[in-house]
Amino acid sequence: MPINAGIIEFQSKTNLHSKGAFQVNTDDKRKHSKSKRKLTNRLRNIPESKTEPMFTNRKINYEISDRINAIHCGGIGAVHMLAKNTGLVQKIDENLNLLKIHLPYHESDHVLNMCYNIIAGGRCIEDLEVLRLDPDYMNALETERIPDPTTAGDFLRRFTAEDIESLMDSVNDVRVQIWNKQSSDFRKRGILNIDATIEETTGDCKQGMGMSYDGRWSYAPLIVSLHNTREHLFVENRPGNAHSSRNAAKWIDKGGRLLKRAFKEVWFRGDSAYNLTKEFDRWTDEGYHFAFGCDARKNLCGIADEITDWRPLCRRVKHPVKTTPRRRPENVKARIVKEKEYKSLHLEKEEIAEFDYRPTHCDRSYRMVVIKKTITVSKGQAYLFDDIRYFFYITNDRELSSEEVVYFCNDRCDHENDIEQLRNGIHALKMPTGELLPNWAYMVIASLAWTLKAWMGLLMPHRATGYAIIRMEFRRFLNMFINVPAQIIRHSRQLTYRLLGYMKHAPAFFGFVRRCQRLRL
Image (cartoon, rainbow, N blue to C red; front, side, top):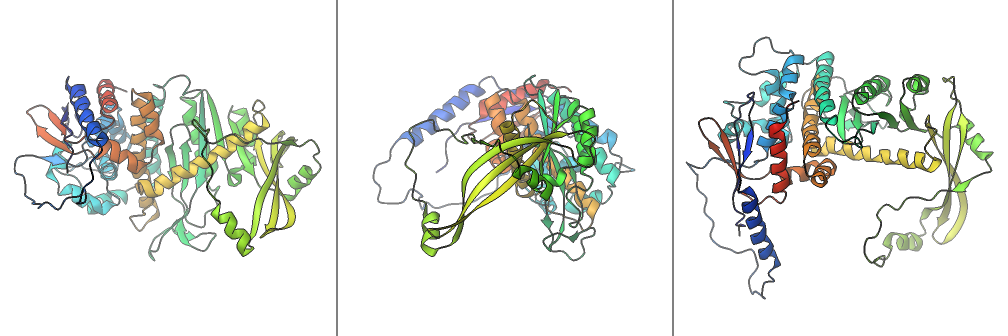
């Protein structure tokens, strides 16, 4: 049974490159309130006992409309306006020169085409064919046609490594302008996360692939992102046998220079694979802060064994209880471990200390924070022994407490969620072509879809909604703000998106539309 959610409209004077403006109807608030009231009353009423299921068996008919033109992704127009009004389209065309003749597409057309395919729900380049055969989708973007999958693949194969870096630099120039529009609290500290992942490929003819450390034919993309907004600043595609730290210093330096254009304080953060001690002195002299994990090497463990002033480490409460605490359910796993007499590890206590340490390649000493974990090893209900393990973190900061250094480094784990969204959220690691560089180019273009989501959150006037957009998964973002059915009405000089479904965050969405209408970077 469809929900009578009312109709919400927004208008746009837009084409693929023209400067346009969205105008929100004055009664949109009234329409949204009416739709929300109807939906609330519908869900609030407790139905009486029924003899039949809620899902009825009424006869269903299908027919084709010849008058109403609609699309499934009504939020795509706002995203396109964001790309235009931030100057992203112009930046791409200025800095990316891959086509000798624009017949008929420009470089920005190809980039936005693949990016919008993901925002419209596509998962691979082949899904462009669905959009290419949808006249209403093309009408919504005021374009006569869009490149097909074959043309998109040909465009990707034109990229060189310098072209890909130029594309990333073009996007990053726009990022800095958006960051500088944020509050001073936002720009107080920028945290750069760096990590790599393994993306397995089953193809036999994938050029540039290699054997990873665990025996898989794969690529090993390197991802550098901003913790504050979860944006992927730099992505590099590498063979699967590449060491995690290969070219890491280059991208960390570029990220540091980028963040310095907007943030007062810049931090680097990563695991032990990016503990690049040769760069520590230079980064410190250039004013950067860093905190990296360190391998528990023999010399460090020897120093830790001689420490006597250990103190307990009190972990932060992850999720404070705001209401009455609930009784914890039975730990089924623990019961089975005892019954089957499996070997189990239990963290008994954590202690923390620190000392000064000078790495071999450094001319100065740095803070080394160490955690001593006492782990009880048991089998079933029988106690076996205590296992002592050390975890080390090195930093050049002298103001944070030892506990804060540990918490800061542990927060790096959130970068794994960013990589997961890159892989399964926007499917940027699909490796659609058979060569290393074209696949790298596709990663960068696909990651632009995630970037536009972050920009929408940063420019959202309602800050709570904006923060939620930055944190939410990509699929949920599409369902809440993009996948809203919209009727496309073409006038002489303007285009109207008439939203046909209920949108929970319509006030915040239209607030973003109004702000984006005035935005000129």
